[in-house]
Image 1 (tube, rainbow, N blue to C red):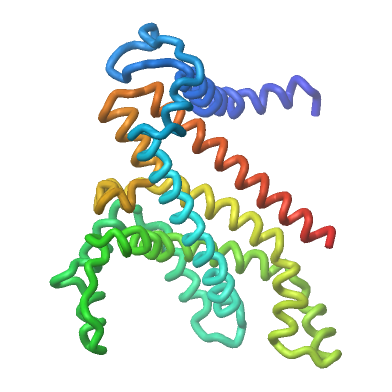
Image 2: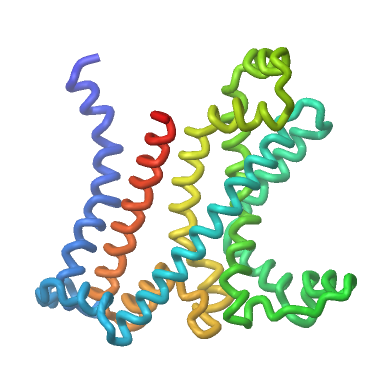
Length: 293
């Protein structure tokens, strides 16, 4: 295959990536150094240097709101990944076991949750969390536990959104884990059993090390998905109560569109992008260090 043929074949994909990804990214970075209202054209943008970044990291209200949203996003992402990955491994091992009847049906049921639109998931879970008629509080009442104000309390609102995300995402990551398990040769387990290894030793000595790359990929995707959370916050809590669920994507939309502060919103978006890059690079570095050890 000649170089010109390869160029022709790649041109459509490269063009689409450039138009819909690279150009908007470059425009966002450029706008982050300007004072610009989203209600006007780009020609009205006025260069202000690093002032937008100074504002979002400064002590003024803009900075306090941004840092609160940044912390909320970090907590949401950390909790989501910390729950999704172990749970997907557990479910993946359960479904992958050939001794479990109905494994294929369970796999389909788990993956079906991921195919449900997040808008529908958010609306359904808002009813489940309802203080009065919500099934969650009703079931807790059956065992003598007082009903909770899950989405109305600053102490539980963000965690409630996390559980919603876990329910919707865990099926997808379970399928990824199952795909990783299929790549592990059965001969390794047979040899371990001959040596007298029990199931726990097989898991920590064979399964977990050989799932490292699958877990790395899953962790990166889980982080990216969690950072982009928007629909549950926009539909259910609108960033409340008391800003406890005001995550960065929702805050950027509020600043950049509702308040028409395009330059400030662009600076927040660039900061979010850079933070995500740092986290992903750290995950790859951590995985590479583990492989060397």
